[in-house]
Image: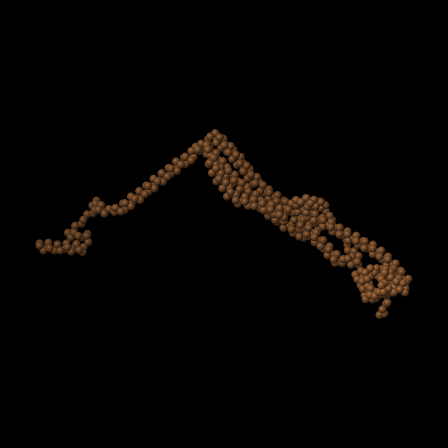
Length: 443
């Protein structure tokens, strides 16, 4: 028995070192697991740091909640104080209604302005398209009646298209204006009701109105800075361009001149080229035709400018320029053709004198006569047409058959043959109707 007990003790010692707890009991017994015993054991393992942190977090949440509740209650109290003057429900409703009406009026006004600008843009496109057509017609340089007819046709077509655009937008624009008028009437009614309530002492909204009006003014300026500013700029710039390139002449003298010369239509009376111009070396046929081309070019330029459609004082000024130009041209035409007629008459008289001199020379052996010797270097002579005299030939001057005066040399000029003194006897001077004797050289 003693040995059995010893063996049992040795096994117990070895079991505690190598065997798991489940087989601690070598006798085959097993421990029972009890939940209450286990909880009792864990009471000794409490983590106080975690508990403190949780409590601190909850405390902070509670404090912030109480603070925000207090702040909200305070704001509610302030609001109640601020609107104490607006306890009258009717006053608040009227204010709200009036302000809504004002907002709606501004919105509808912006929509109306947008409609008008869109309409003007479409009309401007039509104007540009027809302007290109008008310029094309004017650049063709057609006669005035044909040009005027085509321009009238284009103008009528342009007006039809513009009227279509107006009709297209007219109903929407009128409807928008009616809406604005209705809102404005409603706003005036609300303002009358508000004024009546304020007069009765129903509330004091002066400060509130000032703040609101300032806000509305800021919103209005922001909302209209686009459409309204562009529309205003467009109108002012358009007016500037019209006044710059279509001035109004204010000078009394200038207005009188334009008024006098723009009411009639002066027609150009151009005359044909006369051969006397060439014979008298006044102007060649080419030079004459060049003047006619210049007149035609000027007419084209004035006609082109007249078809642009200027405004203010420019159209009558252009008509005045055209009429004055035509009048000046007609005056010069009459002037030089009158001079031509006088030249022809004088040439006819001179021809009579030449015929008489030729008849006298037939009876005498002289070759010619001295007509004028005022300038010894440019003596006017008349030579018998049957005698051929060349430049450089000489003639002897006699006063009587036996009285020799001197010698002259002939030279050519644009006016005909002239003579100059190359020899004189003593103090003699050549006189008119001294006789000329030409020694004909034998070829």
